[in-house]
Length: 463
Image (cartoon, rainbow, N blue to C red):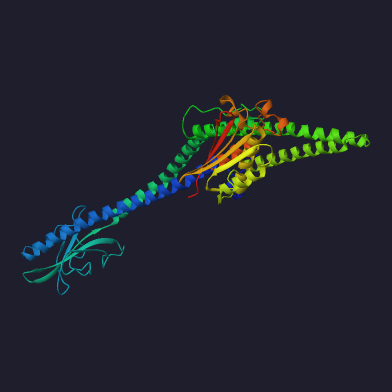
């Protein structure tokens, strides 16, 4: 029997969880695409605005420095070139605030247009409005102060930012129309691609739903592409194979257990029926002894079945450091006096990390098996090294052929008449030994004893 792993995962029950995987993936992709497109549009607008403003700043700065150089050398004319698409508007103001020079074609060339304060060391560029502009238009103004022949003057070079704003508005309008269309197209493409990607998943689901569970060989059809879905399908097939194998073992185990239990129960039932129908028959004590023998055999069988069930349900029991030699000597004392000689003079100290009940059952089953089949002598040895503990139990009985040394550890296996049901075994003792030793990271092997068989159990020593 196997215990199913418990997954303490909350099951979502909201509206979002009831949507299909395709819809949820498409919705998530839509959010990501929309956020990405909006962010890209904002960055594009910001970058274009910064570039255009920087270009304006470069033009007004260059013009302000040029006019300032003319003022320093006394070459400044009263009327400067008029403003155009490439030439900024220019005004030169003296220290008292009077206009010294202005760009041509100004409506009021002697009226000061800007009041931005200059930087004492370098050209300063600011955003300002004309003092006499009713439209309140914005300008990028470069301000620089220099000293001319008649004293200090301040040069203002300005250019309107209307063209920049118009370009930004046009780009914003195009993005406001184009981004939603692009998002819609990408979402539609994503919906189609996700549907194509999930089509094999739906095929796998239909195949899994069509498996009736009554045919052990049913498997999922592997997709042609060896991608994640292909590996997932192969993993599902491996899982189905393991489930089939475990189910087959459980069915066989139940069938064998029922067969083994039937014999002692049937014998007890027959003897009890005879005793009830014929209470005056002689040899009542002998019949009671036979019923007691069958009862003990039935109890041992039930104990072995319970031990196997516990190991299947919990293959990693709690462990503790224990002295294996104490368990061995205790079991040796138990089996002495059963008609064979038990030698245990070479049992040395050995500590292992393990389950006391499980290891005690290992020693007991091996000793009972040896005593049951020994002719005269059973020899027990225990040797310890830094890394391994080796327990050896040998008998001088009929032995086990090399071809049967693996089969003897299978459940409900009896090899021949010498190791038959009549000697008290149900074919579970050695299976329990193998399972317990394996769960402790050890190994059990069978060798010739000339004559007889020698069982050797190797376990990791406790560090």
